[in-house]
Amino acid sequence: MPLSDLIARETQRYLDMHPKAAAEAARLKQHWLFGAPFHWMNDWASPSAMIAEDGEGAVLTDIDDNTYDDFCLGDTPGMFGHGRPEIARAIAEQARRGATFMLPTAEAADVGALLAERFGLPFWQTTLSASDANRALIRWARAVTGKSVIVVFDGCYHGMVEDCFVELRHGRTRPDAGLIGQVFDMTRTTRAVPFNDVGALEAALAQGDVAAILAEPAMTNCGMILPEANFWKRAQALAKKAGALLVLDETHTLSSGPGGATKAWDLAPDALVIGKAIAGGFPAAVWGVSAELAEKIQRSAGASPANNGSSSSSVAGEGAGAPRGRSGIGTTLAGNAMGIAAIGATLREVATPAAYDVMLRGAEDLVAKLRAVIAGRSLPWCVVHVGARAEIVFAPAPPKDAAAMRPALAQSELNHALHLYLINRGVLIAPFHMMMLVCPATTTQQIDRLVAAVDSFAGELSAD
Image (cartoon, rainbow, N blue to C red; front, side):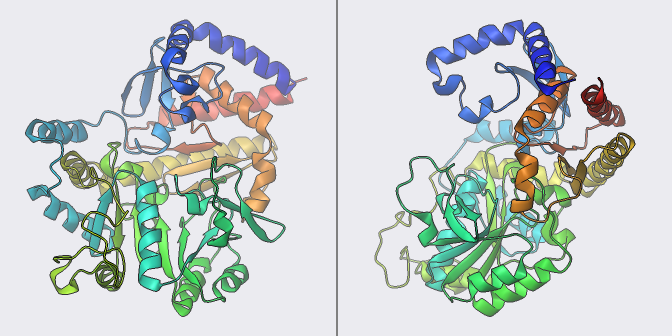
């Protein structure tokens, strides 16, 4: 069946199944810019907004009483399942005692110890999002190294961080058109290099002006791209030689295991960012640093390393004289009591080794079954797999960098059709590309329904 005909049919099917949502979408447009509380909520393949009613475990229900096997999970914040009672209880109990004080709670020391034990870095800070955490580490890296440039990988996404909105075209770093309203040329202080290209990374570092490399252990935002053998071993050595910090963003790759890809792959970053899922879906993120980097940060801020931050001075850099609270890094709600409580509950009760065992086994089952469909129907597709996360890529072999991935992502009509087809059969995957996430509550039956829907879609494409 031609894709255009399939999309037309599936669009009408969606509208027939969502009459309440259509009416509610009209009400949203009366007062919400873009017709939603946040414009990315419009990025689904549906012709009008789905309106969520309830989520529990790996199931989402909309206001039209349609239920979905949810492999999107809020694009990762719900990585351990919706409506977790452990998180709800921790947040409610803390809210009753007070939501935020601009003071640490007794829970904070325990949570710091849990983070250090889990991820192997001794010192931590909290933020409200991974965007804030990445932005903070870029600033600290520049402060402690005295260098201005950061290196990112072409196709990266590190949240709402202006420095990272660049791309590589014809061997040159250029501004990313996705950065709306920016007047400063980010290519003056950011270089993009191809993922998995050790030579290009070495050349980018050779100028001696790089403060930090910011990267995901495996790229997950320009399609899923895995590191080649020994890539990170060589990249870590190059960073150290150049005096550049290595900052790993585990926002998505936290799905690789209890300690993220950093622990699973025995990586040794100077700093680590963990967002979205670290508080079970509550708005919170954390960043951690090595003891050596912690000491440099404290000296840069005018604090005494011996007292781990205790100081009568709070300055933005070596010899600077900024008043207290004026570093420009962080917000008043960072480290709020409810967020700390949610992080503690997640680490103790939700993101457990047993939960990861279930997730990883489920993902392996999903990947094996999708690959069987692709092979059985001789599709020019592949499946890329990182921990509990998997992705269908419209290419015969896994691309090794963003340039190789872009032709697959450019098949927008195919992407739209498959997303809409899955929605109409009660399956949600991440709306941006073909990424799926398995949570502890995901069942074999849900996996089989997703695989069956993909198989049915492929069969319709090949039908005369």
